Length: 366
Ligand code: IPM
Ligand code: MG
Image (tube, rainbow, N blue to C red):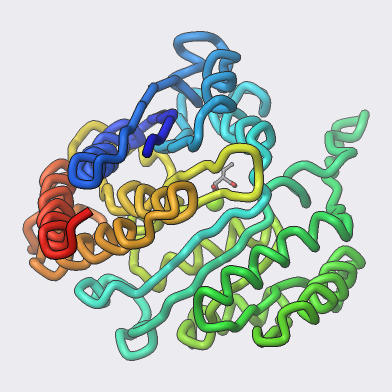
């Protein structure tokens, strides 16, 4: 079995968290015999510095020829004043478009050993396990026309979705729900927006094909409140690009830190895996960033691209084990807690995964 992987470490903490995630992937490969063929390419600010553009041709060509792409983070305040197409973030948006993945899966779970870092009360988040399925290629992010009025005194973006775009996303949400607790909550603003009414009708129609899955609709404002007050009520949450961007950050509050969350973008030519957090330039290079979101991406990659659920579960279990031992990167440390470095956490998870898989393989064989 082989995996052709392109890694785009990107900016800020991207390289250091990517390094830890790769070490976990190599550990899984060593035990299972998975052959991993990795090539690294620049994206974001790193690419602007070396080539002048945030998504160089060579990077894109390599990504399109891979089985999967793993991206660390993009963003650098040095380029804040650049026009939008020459900002580091533009590299990510262009890449998402080119790879064609329209469904962004963002799981947010309450990790029992670090429930105390969530600003939400432990008794409210305990057991929460939400999967945000965010539309990634349409909506306000990409709608045309967009721009500034000729006199510069106004600006506009377009919110537009087609039935086909909503349908394909809804299918993914219902399919994911079948692997989980069989509840889909579709989030929209159908009391105000035409697009949301179309969204609601379409999701409802697709839902008829999944009679074993319960479908609920909620308005985005009341959903946002409910997610913070009763997160255990939700399973799969399906929503558009902008609402999904906002709500997936909110969902991170369940886990206590953005640094814990991975994401997978599927449905296109090549799947893209990226942690939900950004480049965090303020802590870059200090070996204190949380690598768990990036490591979680490796679990998602094994699950979705390589169909290796047992190995994916082993990574998730190893992460819990390491957190349960009390190791905490900077974002999870409480005042007075010792901070465990990025590389020590990566190393500990790598060892725990290796141990678990070796135990399993020596009992059960190949
Ligand atoms: C995310 C990020 C991106 C987005 C930015 C960096 C363009 O916030 O992945 O959630 O808005 O999609
Ligand atoms: Mg975001």
